[in-house]
Image (cartoon, rainbow, N blue to C red; front, side, top):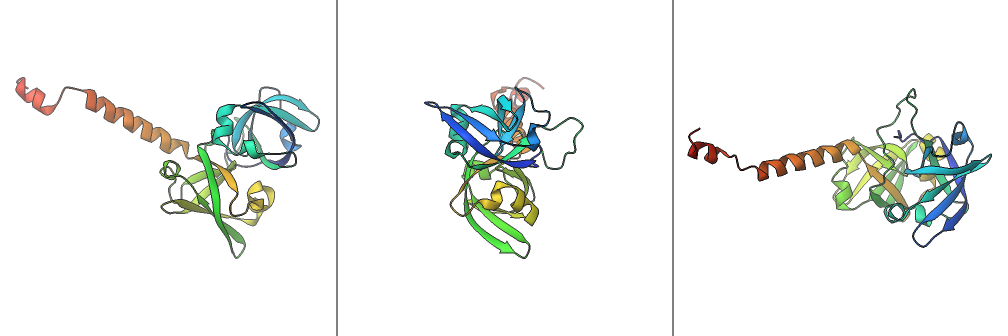
Length: 215
C-alpha cells in the first residue's frame, strides 16, 4: 500500500522490451534506503516489484496488463518518474489509501495558473469518472490529490508550487497522458452493493411468496 506522497523524482536509465512486457532500470537515491529485492515501489503510481538493485537505482519488470493500463510503455531513457516506497507500518499517512493498481489513463486537457497554484484539468473515460467525486481523492501519476471539480468528461485538481516542483506532473502539458487511480473505497462499496442486489434478485423469498404460504 502507498499514500500518494511522492518521495523523489527518479529517471529511467534503460528500458528492455519484450514482445508484451518490459524491464525498467530506474535511477534513484532516496528510495534506495532500505530497499530490497522483492520490495514494492510505485513508479508514476504503478506498483512494481524490485528485481535487482545497485548503488544508483533498481530494476523492475512490467507485465502486459500493466503496459495496457498505464503510461509506462511510453517511458524511455531519461524520462523522469515519481517514486514512492511502500508505506511503512510506523509511517505518517499523509495522503490517502493508494494501491498502486492503475485504473486507466487520462489526458491533460488544460492547465492554468491561479496565483501561486496551477490547475490541471484531466480528461478521462466515464468508467473512471464515476468514481471521482468533488473534494474526494484521486491519484495522478502516483500523486495523492484532492479533486476540485468534476464535469461530464473531465475533472480538475490544483497543485501548490511544491508539488509541481518535486513531481513529474509539474512537467506535463496539455495532451500528455497520466496514470489515474481512483479512490479504492468507492470501488469496494460499489462491488459490495452489486453483490447484495444480485443476492436479492436471486432470492425467491418475496413478500408475495410469504403471503401465499400463510406468513
